[in-house]
Image 1: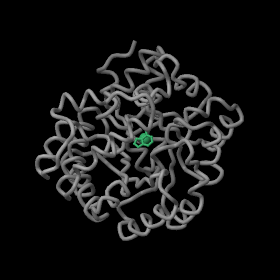
Image 2: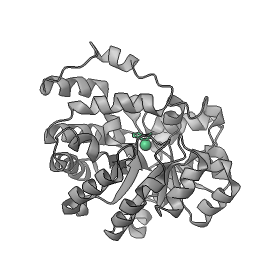
Image 3: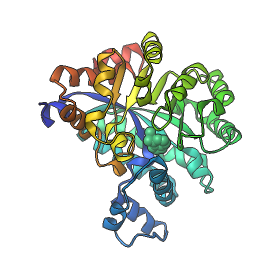
Length: 326
Ligand code: ADE
Ligand code: ZN
């Protein structure tokens, strides 16, 4: 068995965390009050009780509703700062953080408001907490590609603050192929590329993310294990996969932790990492995710340490920066 202290003590990079998914019920209620927003839940406890999901869409409905309390630059700052303080306690030294601009611009919040609040907190995180951080802007795949193109336009003035673009939201019925052109445009602008694929969707979606979107990293990718040729293709490219065990359990991608593909993937040589996805909704931050797979899959210390090292190899840090952490 691997102890909580061992996991906490390992320097880690978090590569798959949605900033909107770190909004804890306590802060959600505080921001609702600050912005005079009526919530349909009478208490923090009642809200937490609603966090019981049978599939991805159940979660997304509640997650987008929760994001409505985020209105001002200060709100985005407070959200991001709260995550960074948590991250520091977890032994995270580098974080590559997703945000979903369309969730906010569709409500009339300016792109500028969102990015300025988040970026100021990341700057304070570097200075006061010593946490290195990068931002990845995700397109919502349930919306049309034209909306993603508009979001890419919005982002261009802030290019120096955004390392990459990603793809998230409702996977089934919204294949990577829907976003081929906007990913090509993002690539021409110099953005790194990632996409959620093979979470609820099949291995064919992982294939499309690699072949059509030409991603640098796959988010989740659980379904890849179904196809040996795909596993070979991922290994040839040394493609990082950002796994999120507690998320998979909460969203019934797996029925119990013992069936999580992480250990098989690790033993097939895949560059797998452990991440928290939406920790405020799925019951744990990065260390709880490490502990859950270590316990259920009987990982030894060397395997757990490998997962932590993989997080730096799979990151968008430069080779020189990686060398500082490894
Ligand atoms: N948005 C936030 N978390 C997500 C997930 N796990 N899958 C797809 N979209 C998301
Ligand atoms: Zn995710």
